[in-house]
View (tube, rainbow, N blue to C red):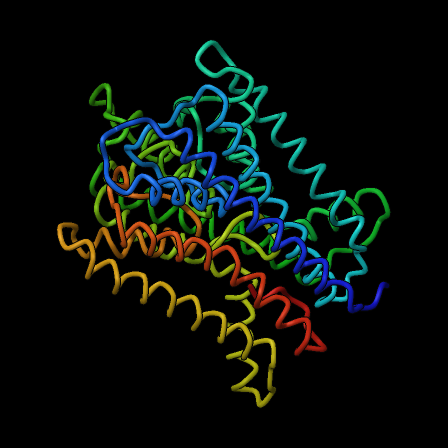
Length: 405
C-alpha cells in the first residue's frame, strides 16, 4: 500500500486556492447575470448565488437571473468545482488516514469520471423542450454533486427520471470516492471492503430506512399536503405517503434537490428532517453533514470507553461534532438577531440546512444583507471544515479505520 506522503497537503492547498478563485469568478459572473429586480444588496445576492452553487447547497431564492447562458454555465462550473474539491481533497485524506493505497492520480481520475458520467446520465434523463442541453447538464451535475442549483424546474418528484436516476446519483456521490473505488476493486480485483466502506454502505442504508419509516409513520398520522391526494382511497394515499417519505429521506441526506418545500410536509416531519440533514452522507463524498462514519466512531468509542479502551479516533469525531454544533449555533444566533421577522423554528432549520450543505427550506430564501452573508459563511464552513478535520486526522491518528468527517 502507498504510505502517507507530504505532497497531499500541498495538493489540497492548491485545490482550495483554485476553488476560492472560482467562487470569486462566479460572484463576478452572477453580478453580471442578475436581473434588474429592484432589490437592494445585489452584490450580496451575487455572492450568495456563487457560494450557494460552489458549496453544493442549493437554496432557492426569489431573485431571478438571466438563465440563457451565463448564469447556468457559471452554476455548472461551480457545482462541478465543489464536487471535485470534496471528492479529491477528501479522497486523498481518507486514503492516507486509512492506508487504503489509493494514489492521488487514481482519486482525481475516478472523481472526474464519476462527475462526468453522472452529469451526462442525469442530463440524458431530464432533457426535453423545457430543459435544453445546458439546463439538463446542470441538473445532472446537481444530482451527482448533491447540489440543488438548477436553471429550470426538475421533473415531478414521482417521475421515473427523479426516482430511478437523480436520487440514486445523489446517493452515489454521497458515498465518497474511496468507497466507490473499493467497490470497483471488489468487482474487478476481488478485494475485500474495508471497515470504512462497510460502515459507509451500511450506515447510509440504515439511516435511509429509518428516515423513510419514521417519516411514513408521521404522514399516516398527519398526511402531507404535498402532493394533494386525488381521491379518498386509503391504499393510494398510503402509497403516495410512502413515496414521499422515501423521497424526503433520500433527498435530505444531503442532495436537497428542488423537488418540494419543507412547508409542504407535516410539522413533525419538518423537525425530523433536521437530524437527517445533520447526519448527512459519507466522508470524501459530495454530501455534507456530520457523516455516518463519524457517528459510528463516536458510538463505538463510547462503548470501548466502558470497556477500558481508549480511542483517539473517537476523540477527534467528538471534536468534529462539537465544531459542527458550534457553527450551527452561531449561525442560528446571528440569524435570530438579523432576521427578526422569521420564526425561530425556520431559522434553526435554515442554520442546519446551510451548515449541512443541504439547501432545503420551508420556502424561498428571502433574506438579504447581513443575514445572507451569515448563510454564506455557514455554507462555506459546512463544505470546508470536514476536509480540514480529515487532514487533521491524517496528521494525528495512526490507527484509524474510519473517516471522521
